[in-house]
Image 1 (cartoon, one colour):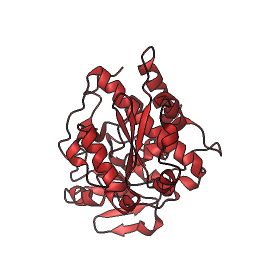
Image 2 (cartoon, one colour):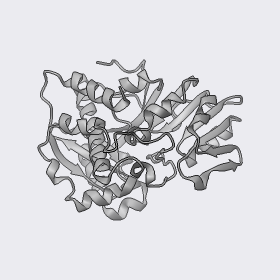
Image 3 (cartoon, rainbow, N blue to C red):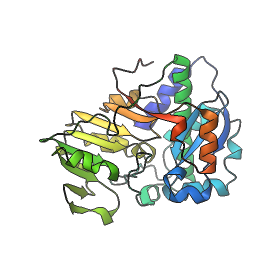
Image 4 (tube, rainbow, N blue to C red):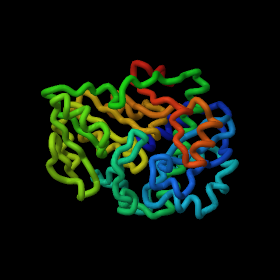
Length: 305
């Protein structure tokens, strides 16, 4: 099965025999925030208070959500029903290609072209998957809260990959603020990108459109947006030779089991600690980092289900 199908199956198993929360609201940043990192994510709120994030700047998703009424039609829907939309096949019956790597995160990967979805699905399908992914993340938070689990705080911004001379680090999505942390350590760096404008050789690193170049990397740092655009299975398949695979970004809030099973060694995301403060900041288009902390979760930290 695909990552998406595995995740939904995991959520079905984790909530079996228990009440499944329903959607309370969809919280969107203002349209004018779309030009900044404070406008990158929506938050789906469940009636148990859980929040799940999803990236909304692919294919003008934020604009379409605002125009469609801001998710009013979702209120009262079962979270698991909405989550299943994330794993639904596209209208073409295909997933996005390896090259459709959408870079973006609160760790600020460089903005990539909005073509990440349009090559393989219609706008309505993109909206359903965006909201379905938010539901997966929100329901994952419900499961973790019921377990009494909170992930440990991150100790650095690069997921503990500890680059050093002799390493060949792969980066999926151009994390501009993190480039120097890798190259200054003397590691070789290969960046896989979607936007052909970035392709080429730079001082200390190489940018390519070919995901197969990850096969030569012993450490990989990836944007979590590959979860949303359904390139995660193909992308991780290129990383089988890597000793460390780190996936980071605010929308990395799902149950980690399907990722660990595919070789991911650390998942890093944002753990919301002040729901009301977070929602208020997001809806205003203000920074919301004061209402959440960055976490770093490994298989040894995770009690599982």
